[in-house]
Length: 459
Image (cartoon, rainbow, N blue to C red):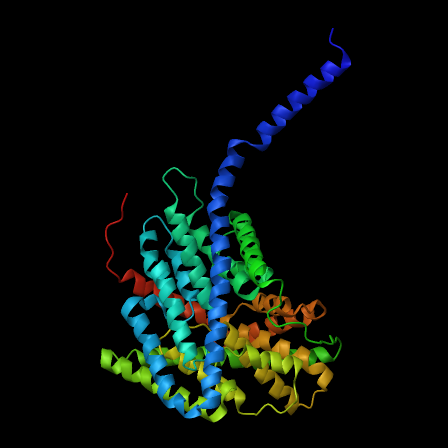
């Protein structure tokens, strides 16, 4: 008969063997193999997002420098930048124009067994490269654009490429999940907002059940965000503004600001759609180039009149309003930014509207605060509310907008006011148009992609 220590050792060995077999089952091995390429893609996305952000900062600072020193250069440099940005897209990758989010939405819809080969038109690495180059050129010349939407398209293109490079027999996640996960990782890395990336996927990119892709999205957001933080350090997109949350009757003011800014955002989206429809009447290359030069000349006039606050992403404006607000922002800055965003987007180059919409909302909110003589201590909250409202009016993603602004500022005490503003803005924007700006553009990209000639699908 075995003594107790021997029985104990055998029992322990049996337990270890069966526990290891259970933990390292075929299902677990398959899950690890599926996830590894996505983790690698997330690291690449984090690095690319940081590099793209540094390029954008350099381009914006360069445009500020020449505009301060030689403002008359705007009438030469800005139209040329508009033309060069448009030509890069027109010549090399038409799907690189604009924001990038509608292209990802269209790519997700086309990621079916019969159509997935078409997604290369929207989300190839060539499209991503042209996206970066076109947007940087446009910003150098004084365009009013952001990098967040483009980062999402670039990220989805990277995930698609790595998913396609996996060898035969390697267990893969679906093509749809690859694009969805890439979009989430891109937004998280661009804004340093992991929750915003997750909510954006659920609210904007997909109608699939969350259980299908939750682990892929969560892990990609974490890896991409940690990679960006490893390079830049822990940071907030906008810092820590002083905010005094209120309840009671002050919520009526919050709701009113959200309604006004949501309506303004919805009207901005309608303006872009109207201009896009009008532009389609110009069919020849010469006519299109003339349109782009016209947009550039009008933008040059705005840049010459207003100066550096009339161009760029608008992030410096938000920081000034939240941290150094002297109450002297000119009344005309909002219509100038509104027009600059429309001209830059309609010029046909690459560039997003996420960051610029936030800055437009901040400027409008500050103007409304001064018009209503709101006390200085309460203005920051209403500026944040206005940012959420305007962005929601444009993209129709109220919870994404609220979570983004929350994570950008770390003002958790204002979460209910931000969520309320998103819901109010969504309600009023739906009265202007029942579909979001991105949904309209997605349909256009779907038609454009399906009209392209493609080689036969390889079995």
